[in-house]
Length: 271
Image 1: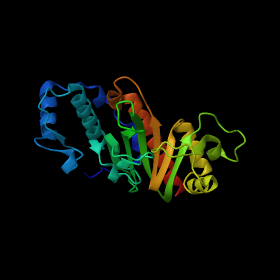
Image 2 (image 1 turned 45 degrees about the horizontal axis):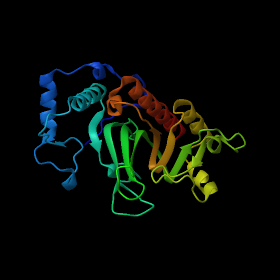
Image 3 (image 1 turned 30 degrees about the vertical axis):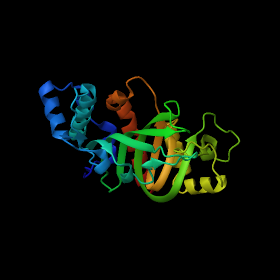
């Protein structure tokens, strides 16, 4: 899948009208049949724009959301895929570590992906991520599902992997904004502490300058931060009824793209 090229400034003025248009049944059926492949199986391959042929009655709300997001992407010069291989995302685990061991695979899934490449060659993406994790013996109560909004911006500055959890209460005696508002942690394994705290902050500051930290706190309050390679991920948990439908909500998407627009524009000016 080749990402389109879109200027950072364009992300702040996208056309969200296609998300409000309900497709007619014929167009929706044509889109679904174009994407579905008889016999396709995730276990033997991965295609971001294909899905197994569904023998039962298809989920119309699911395909309506995919159709609307695809139309939105075409109208704005973006690329849309209704799922993405985590291996395409620097540092994102396809399988998650289990502290207690066992045979059950903890996995991450990324879906409803909208992306493009800026005019300066740096990429940006927004998506929803689902983490499936098992805390112990495999029973229905041991498996938990976490849903995250993800906004990813390629900064152009290489970084070691750094995870910073947004603090629920600001530390007023911290030496700077970064330590006052974020604590080191593991966003995927769920651990609350990280050894070598000072070194963790030092690595983070190579990308998160005081100016960028201030901007992030203004445009993306409550988001956790994860850095790997030259990608900065802003991640926020969400839980609400019919949550997958919200991935095509114009107001929620506008928030994600405005975050990407401001951070992308700031990092190009700082380069």
